[in-house]
Length: 181
Length: 286
Image (tube, rainbow over all chains, first blue to last red; front, side):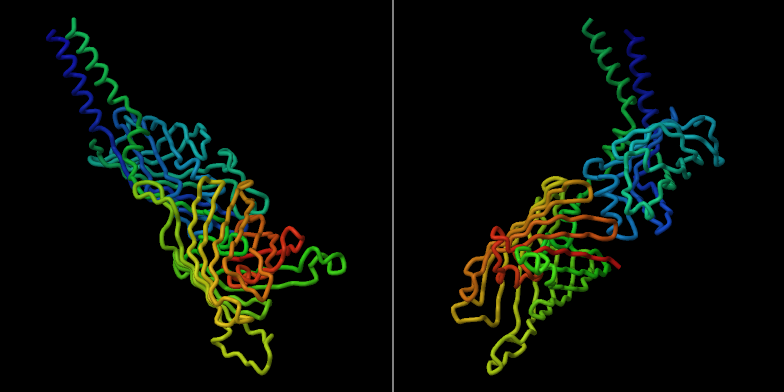
């Protein structure tokens, strides 16, 4: 009987420690940039949620589409209404793992984050290059990559084809802090 | 035995906890904010009348509206296209909630100015609200001198006022409707039997046919209408076509004018008798 209780206590302890090993941010920033012949379109979102489980190197990101701020209000309306359909698909998410997370030391390290990105209800496997810096009280992740609009069932009609790039540059920066439930 | 089962049970629970999905944690941590419903209508007009939508903050729009003659005028008048009434206007968003506009219509050489203010927005989330409500007020000055020269009208006598409460709801991404109680005051009327004050209620709907095209309809039911003219309720059907920076609205209506005081109280065409005017609204944002 004693052994069983010891096991339970061990499990509980594991839970406690793993819970402390999570790092979260609620105000990560994601910016996308479309550079086309007619105009450049830029949108910022500074309310992105991101979490890292430091025991496994797993990472998840949740982005509210309506929180993207555009220079022109009309662009923002079109983005939500016509392209990403925020009423139907309010969030974009990423779920994956930071490859080689356990080897990351204090210095900024180049890594790959592998996982599944879901935008506009369409999921796709992706490998995102990122820089990670882990210190005592934070995990800083930043980087940039390109997305193809067509990969996510977002169609650009002929009349605005010259206004919107087919390839969108995405930059991101998340400063995770220890997460306490 | 019971103890062991209980132990296993506790064990299972405790094992499951750390296995909780990271995305679920993010869902729980997402701040519960209000979600303002946007794009109830595509343009600032449903067809003839104003929709709940405002011009955006610091955006200036030039809007050109045309209504041609009646399509039942036949080939000689090229189905009404030979006649053209135009209203052009500058409309500006002082902020996201308050729009000011100045326009000029060729029909009766009328100038109009309006203010539209968004009082409440439709919201979902923590402080949800089922409708959007805006207030609209306009003044129009008729400068066409179609009266007896002996009966010279003063500026004040040429004024018309309109007040509206716009109540709209986006029921689903593809269906919105609006109810518009309206009050029209006319400083001068044609004959003494005509009322100076006319109440009306407007009904408008938008049905999205595709991402960029919607079918709109609009009806204004007016009470206590003028006796000097055979006034009819205005009815309009049309489509909104959105192309990036513009919204094109193609319209079929029994009204020939594009300002509230006119199309609500002075429409005489019989839509189902073929007195239909083709028209369009085009806006360009700067």
